[in-house]
Length: 176
Ligand SMILES: Nc1ncnc2c1ncn2[C@@H]1O[C@H](COP(=O)(O)OP(=O)(O)OP(=O)(O)O)[C@@H](O)[C@H]1O
Ligand SMILES: O=C(O)C1=C[C@@H](O)[C@@H](O)[C@H](O)C1
Ligand SMILES: [Mg+2]
Image (tube, rainbow, N blue to C red; front, side, top):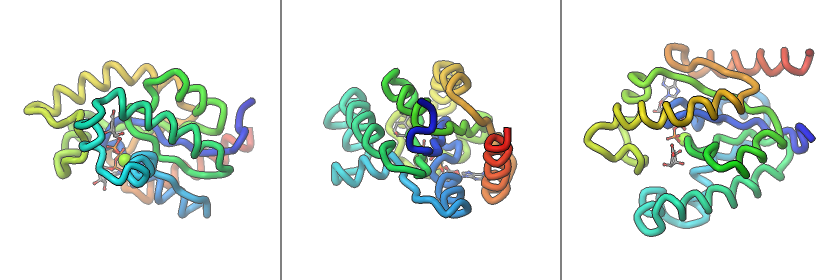
């Protein structure tokens, strides 16, 4: 059954704006906001790179799935997922069953610019983050596309304007 808990899920590549836009969207709609990455960090008491270092990516993905399953039970919440949360079939089922999925898109050039400022992304900790982002996009874009109820370009628009576009699209979806 769709919309079981009426969540809004933001999906997309690292740097596409899930955390930033998610926060703004929640504020605009007067809904609670949860950032899945922050929730995982809060529960573990360490930053994501440390989880990757100690438990590897499989350990992180396990934690990500557990936390996603739990937070998606909360009604009406806006959830910024992690960039790779869509990789597990069980996570995709949760997204599809518990609300509306919003895919935030930006060019690889823009993603490189936005992610170059901080070091909290272990998958991009390489000498050539641009090539890595192209590889991740190749693998993930069909998944993001297939899950999305709404697709929004975040490349050139400002944060408030992306938030407003999503609010409008959500209203359109409700009225159809
Ligand atoms: N529409 C936008 N225009 C300009 N800058 C933006 C926009 N959206 C996000 N940013 C900036 O890009 C950077 C990355 O955004 P953010 O952390 O929200 O991405 P994310 O999708 O949550 O990434 P991750 O998957 O790694 O958590 C931040 O510095 C943010 O301020
Ligand atoms: O793209 C990814 O796989 C990731 C993105 C981040 O949001 C974090 O969830 C983590 O760094 C993994
Ligand atoms: Mg984020």
